[in-house]
Amino acid sequence: MTIADLFQPMSFTHGPAMKNRFMLAPLTNTQSGADGVMSEDEFHWLTMRAKGGFGLTMTCAAHVQACGQGFPGQLGIFSDKHLPGLTRLAAAIKAEGSLAAVQLHHAGYRSPAPLIGQQPVGPSDDEATGSRALSLGEVEQLVEDFIVAAERAEKAGFDGVEIHGAHSYILCQFLAPALNRRTDRYGGNAENRARVIREIIDGIRARCRPDFNLGLRLSPERFDLDVREIADLAQSVMTQGAIDYLDMSLWDAFKEPADEAYKGRTLMSYFTELDRGNVRLGVAGKIMTPQHAEEMLNRGADFVLLGRAAILHHDWPNLLKADSGFQPIQTPVTVEHLRKEGLGPAFVKYMQGWAGFVAAEETAGA
Image 1 (tube, rainbow, N blue to C red):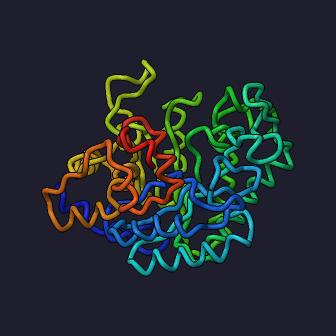
Image 2 (tube, rainbow, N blue to C red; image 1 turned 45 degrees about the vertical axis):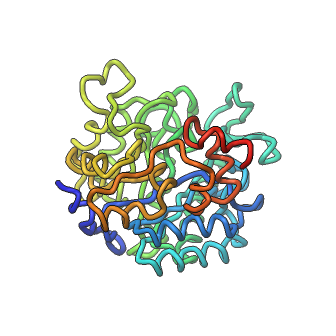
């Protein structure tokens, strides 16, 4: 694989092909309204990335229930009041030749009680966060609301959605045995703990149009997760073939597993070795340079998700396409640079909380 291979189109079982191998990672940016309605700043940030050459432009995590909000200024998709902004966004992204996707999310016990105005929920009671266990009926409603959110995204004109099953948000909480101590059909063995994800996948595939693109994001470690168990889930989901791509959020795509039992090879390799059938495999985690992206393809990924790199350069793919010697700017960067790259004031402030990302001398005057 070479740099040129990053610009080869990539087809999916459902829906149109990506024009290249670059997907915009779903990035928290805290820029939308308190009610989840899209702001001009969020619209501007995302459409700039579509113009910048990303093959698929994905929103931040968009919560499917009001009580599932995970951070201030989060984009919502739990109500039809969100449709006008989402419809405008989908049309603008697609007009630039980029696929448009919404990431579907519920923060579960990671929803701050002061933000949502009620006790957060999760698969089981959690003393550390003060969250309560969902009833069986509420779990069934959660599944339904993920599916309805996908239908809402379809109505808004998006090409597809990604289910957020990573980072210890609610679906990931169901996967974790220490957090999911349920005794009904959604708890116990690995198959039962993954049931909520499988039912969401099946429901979206059954109720959205045949060419609706569907992805799943998983993280393979931390949060009481076991690498082998997540790899087995990934294999099972890919074998079923209902999703179009698996997005593995590795934190660092070059690292070995943290668990001593799995060391001696890269964390990524546990997923590239799987039989993926027609499902595409993407990886995210500290992929900053063209050489990093090229290496990911050489290690077996079908595409890469760019997060921090896309914050630094809205047109990262176009810059590389125009100049094979392109190298991204080094951090820390100035506030002015981030503003030029389409980050609004709330997003800039959020990035100032990331160690070493924004130049310290700029912080006071931002």
